[in-house]
Image (cartoon, rainbow, N blue to C red; front, side):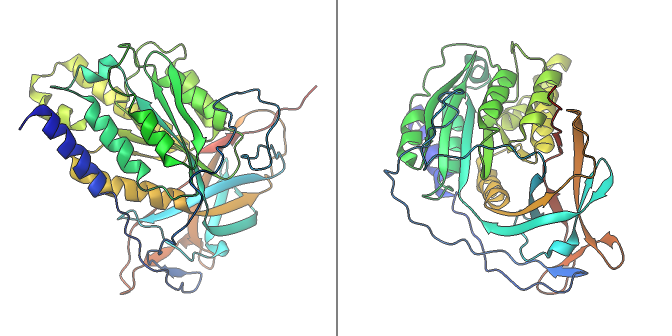
Length: 376
């Protein structure tokens, strides 16, 4: 099979499997037990020519924001936490009552004051690595895997979701700004053909995107499609990690090096294996500490489940809010932990399927936030 035919086939396969299957919402039992039943996603219609959001991606210091733009505000009295509860297949678990949630800040229980659930439009920035260093690991044209992953995720978005595309090598470049018109994102990714630099400055690109998105209200996320390798970022890993924690925008990372790693493991030296392990650890850390998730697919058949899991985690969330008992404005980072409990026994909540069988679940939420600092 010729190279171009192979590339086209892979792209078609990746895009053909991205349909997200979601079932119907089911009833919950008492606060000591809940029944897990997937939700049914509702269709949505929107004008594809709707004006794009004048976002912070284009201009950090833009002073004027039209009425239809994403809103920016800071509320220091209430901490808002978006939470996704997923079963072991990545399906969202609905109908969990407010009383089953417990929030700990620095291990101190907090009183939940705000609680809501349901679907909402998303604001997503796709951050895509496109460097010569990434491509050199692959035999033949390498960009098709990046494009396949990117196109596949775009297919899961709804008409009223906003999406922007940022590519990075030595520096990040905004290929398309936030818009509900997905054609702009597709056209932007068509520019990913021949990389101009070998550098892959992951830390700088992520921190810059987090900073630009940190003030956007509503459901938002960064979908990182990359190898996880950083070469010559101005920021160190520790500084990038702190800045990303402070930004608080969830990162959903898709690693692109696993199949190669498995294929050539026997030929690698210790330093090459260490590079892979470090890349995986970095993507895992960034995702976990922002309330996102990291995925490392070994073959294309895994991509549909990854898209579905990200879709479920982003689309269906519980929104919790609380007024911190620690009112000190010291600018310190405070750890957050969200648990599901049976308030009657103070034990972990038992979740069962429709047949009454217990199932495993995970709670996805950000790891913490930076407290405001008193202005002198």
